Length: 314
Image 1 (cartoon, rainbow, N blue to C red):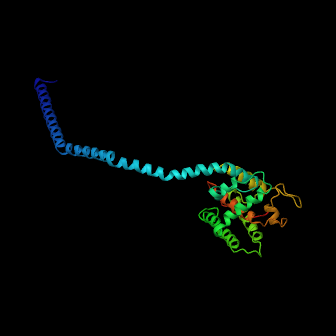
Image 2: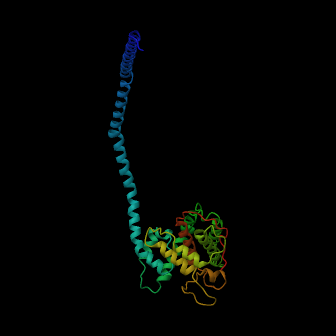
Image 3: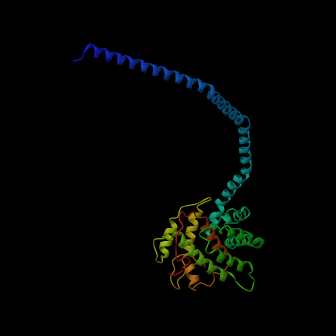
């Protein structure tokens, strides 16, 4: 039974707890006020200083750096304008030149297309001249052989860092060395062209080879895969034109002792199997180099691990 005495004791205890709690609340409130005062004294000036610094930086950017960027942009635009003008002009010239090159089975090499003087000379050829092919060949041979084969040297040097050429660049350079010391007594084209054709063959296999396969691949398969490679045109369908020249000229289907479908004496099969005897011309040497240059421009996403590069069985 709860007596009055016990009831009074309980009430007294509750009052004491309320007073203690109130005291703690007042102390906590006072502590928060002190913290806020110290924050205002110590940190508000820091924040103000930061804001002032940010504002100063913004003003400096607006007044000094922004004009510099604008001037730099104008300078770059002025410096690159001649390049863009050149590209527009050279592209316009190649619209006429590329069909002429295609008509006479010349691979569309950037070493040709970016030569302003050569492209201009090609455009000036008379399309109705019976000797146009001979004159075209002369123009291209003269272009590459000028100044000790300067244009050809530059083209080959561009291939050195290309993964497709790493294992074969020495062979290609040896071919050029033979070309550069040639004499009238020896037709070096008869020696250079078969060697370059084997390198063209090897690179073609390396480009389209599926590294999960280990068997030798037929040329029909190689040509089909080559046709599927992505276009990388700067001028006018040069990728497709080059694919056609490679498939229908160099790797065209052949039969023993039967005439070629494309009679241009640059059939890999006929040459390497000793069935062609008139292939050794300087224009065909340059054609081979131009095909290699086309390969160097292809963007290959994944390098294959072909173990039979350069194999020429067929």
